[in-house]
Length: 214
Image (cartoon, one colour):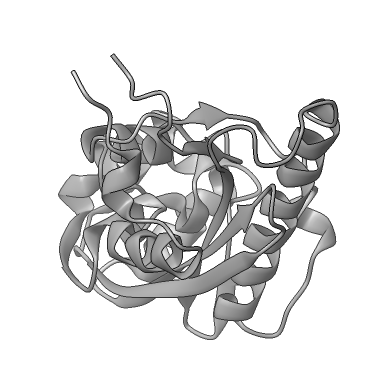
């Protein structure tokens, strides 16, 4: 049973990993995919790019929610917050989002193996009713295993790395190819819970307000 006055959190992302991470932290969310064209946005640094994309995603979803709830009188219900996130990998002077295709993923892994990169995840949290926004970027250094060509071929063949920033996951098959990290595990998954807690507080709430109750 959910508490009636519990704030509502909407995740502006199609990522099942982000939703699963939130659920494991006791937070059920609604999902509305933003539809933002990520390929149309450019930036000179990975942290700037992921923050811009997170901001665009959150703003697009928040506007759709405002329009759908236009008939509701302000202040008559619980707060609605929209969270936009985006992740990119900074490696060897390049900004790596999702690979273009399987060959691109193979080339990336051949370059990344035995080395490290920094995974950046931008967060933008919008209070739909009040219009306030809280933002931040989390960064975690990822040290990749010195995997073989056969391992790379097998991994890319699963299709998993074709749909994620940097061509790897840490919470799936790719976890075996990550030797260690320096920073928050959630950042690599695609959402930093400690950063989310701080952003929620900036907007006048507590992360515990979003916990579901049995």
